[in-house]
Image (cartoon, rainbow over all chains, first blue to last red; front, side, top):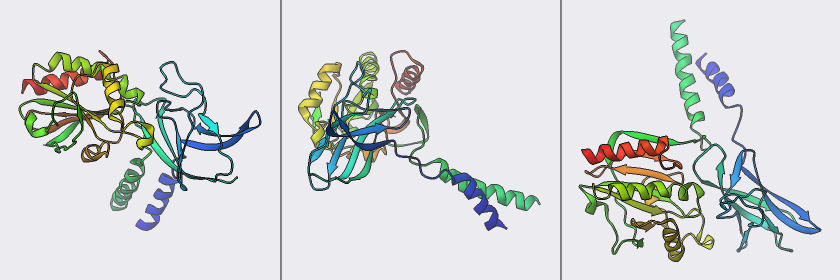
Length: 117
Length: 188
């Protein structure tokens, strides 16, 4: 009986699963040029003073620092982006500093990325 | 029936509590009192700015110490600096020592580890109190810090009395809370 009850409660309490990633890396094109951009989830601001970076497993870092920023240069007003280097697999970790709109702190996240050419 | 109900409540608590304390828990503003004052961990950072020699916790016995964990690339941190400068100006002579613990958020390629960049930020924001470069996050880890900016208030006996995180501004309620805490510890 206890076990059954616990299982039911557990299912109800945790059914929402893990929290979604606060940002995602997106490949696209701008005026015919391949780009990479970091798209934040709703109500989240990306720190523009330390722009997002892709730390490539093969070595090297891609900084995604282009995009309009707020008056005090604290946050990106649009998804930060940069040109996608040709011929390089985008595999490694995306590091982003961000702030939730309703918070007064900075926090950072690292996410694995693996984009096919 | 009562036994079943009690069992259900116990299971509910056991299951719900871990779910609520996940890594993505929301944080708006935290300021807290430690239930039981505990000894502040010593730090051993070797690179200091605004100090002729490394500042050690044991040298500060008899003074109230406010640690500010920050990084110059954090807007929440730099917007709080005017309040900290004000605390330093107002209470240093009464026994308060403010110390910045500059802990980078990104690896060295971002420039947060560079001493010259930290020095430039100190000048830009008018910070004259000592700042340690915590480039390996050792002090951050010892104090179990999670957010920029964070604050730890240590009493004259070297014990942690108050902890908190989050931006605040001159005269706002959080500023007044911290100021009252500083005054309380200075009066002990």
